[in-house]
Image (tube, rainbow, N blue to C red; front, side, top):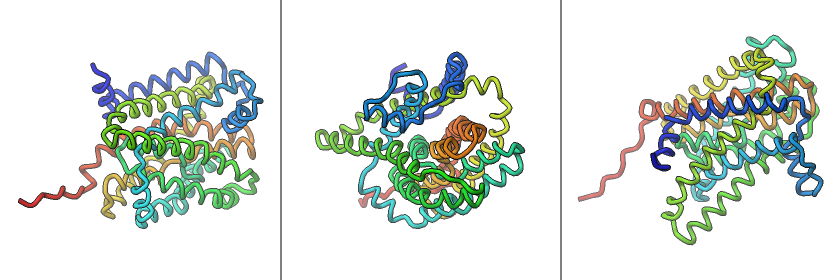
Length: 356
């Protein structure tokens, strides 16, 4: 089997679920072997600051802390090479799509997660962690899910950028409203925006500019198979790292994962399909509908974890760490589901016919 045919099978989700399950299993086994949960892990941003300042100490915990940003960069960078500045400008001129994203992110999602936590989670600290996880819209991974589902990546980027600004203002308000008196550094949000969104965006835009200047769009097309492969490898690597971080805990206390899995899976499934259906009824194109649905569904686990670590107990932090272990596989299923619903829910415009 040639590399191009293998990549086609991965992008068509014929082999990707198997590789995702394999990556999750590898991560759990690595976490069990190293008992990583016993380590005090350094936040990725702090590790990068230590490297820049020359104070980084090489250790297993510090090395592992860099795995998530490295994996996310490998996932995000290929998607960012598809961003054309003209398309980004067009996305800013899409008020209906933006209105749906803002409405569901700030008037629906936090309260849906709160309701699910009230129904399914009895432990007060796990309840707090789940509610905290629902507060912040995703600022990074929704772009790769939109990219994998063949959605409008520039539109997803615009929505992510606007969410990045909005949540710096609104997260403290929602945290106080739904959880209580919470104190945390809002600059954590800004730093995460730069790390998980800014760096891949700059690298992707520069790559497109340099490649197209030398060889045009044809040269960019020739790079796409390799970039797609890098994105999928980044996804698998990220899964290995995230599951390794709590692999031993998953095996020792599977009940916590199961307790969080039900409300989280319901949240992602209900939010995504409702928004995707609304988009189809509002006559959005499939590409726009997918971008809107993922941007209304994904949650910012990096921010949730950072706030939980600085402002709450270890159990609350554990609940937020478990979140992405559930979110990523569910969102991959939603990518597959979106591609299957494309022809059923969305009516694409007919191609123009040249005059005879």
